[in-house]
Image (cartoon, rainbow, N blue to C red):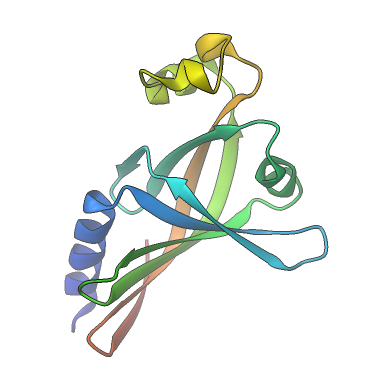
Length: 139
């Protein structure tokens, strides 16, 4: 498989995925993996999430913004790992961009709730796996 094809298939996987596994680093240096709802993506380079400001991942990201994100299609036995950094955004534009109906259940003060944060991932490289092919590429 060529790099261009791996990137194309990886993008198709991200576009159809609603869940991504986010890997952060604990204070002790151990990886912490959790499932996150992918809110939006701009190609493979930028992935958007929202989360509670009070969550453990926020304090981990403040100390070390280096992360990986993994998307998987279990039926096709394919996966894509993206490596990069995450920014924690609390500005109005970012919050409004990702705000969805029903979020009031989790953020009763609305879009300006202090416990509502946006995460913007910026990818540096990727690794695509499918059918025994393992292709690494820069973004």
